[in-house]
Length: 354
Picture 1: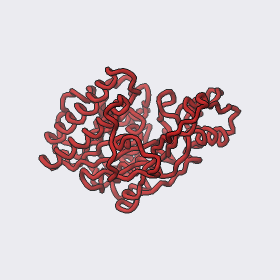
Picture 2 (picture 1 turned 180 degrees about the vertical axis):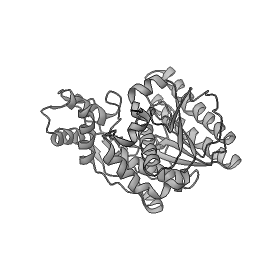
Picture 3 (picture 1 turned 90 degrees about the vertical axis):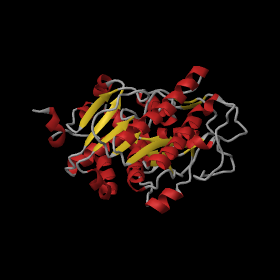
């Protein structure tokens, strides 16, 4: 059987329920993609994979006859990771680095720019690399857009642009005037994203590209790295391997988690209906401490793993990272459909099947 046809007929996608959920809540958006070519950077990453999955799902279900060109440094690694995406006839893998890729031929209606460098900053060299990827990569993608008839571009920014959230700010809003601490290397990522947003504004003012800005917070779901700097993924990984759930800090850090399928709904809506260069927070406004998250994962999965807090000395300063999502709710009609408990269940089920 032709593998390109198999996905449409007999491929049993474990994300079917989630992809139907995304399509249901974005159905009125897809007509503008009919017959179009889109360009995606970061399509092999956590959130980028969800954007590609949901695009192909809508493309097949609605017979959009659209195509996605996906920029990747390693087509071979992409094929190994998600063969069902790569073998879809609507996908074109385009090899290149986001900072220097040669522009593909043709015109493109939409760009989804999610390529970034978000690894932990431990050395000065890490800071340089992060800034180069974010700033030079964004500039390269914007230059590509003005030469290839792009009308709308989604830039994945970050809540890190606000800097450390003050303990008395329960939910940070888009007009919050804080910023990254320039004396800390940990602020490299957030400062890079701030420059990325500025570039989007400048290109919008000069060239008219409708750059839509999504400031992402914390997420959960399939494709999340299990061995990175995401506590949610690390805890799931501990349970999958029958290890103790290790909390490296004191457990008081406060986060909130939006399930990736909901995040995809938000991203597609912001791309199609959001105001240009007008940032929208993307995340959950329901806070949870890291200790509560670990215990919740243990309870929901019914794991025998023990929760171990490595740092027993509780900090006097609350590390809080929780957005206000009122702007997206009121102006774009967006909401969180899938709560934290169900996010845990779905994520564990997905990885336990692999």
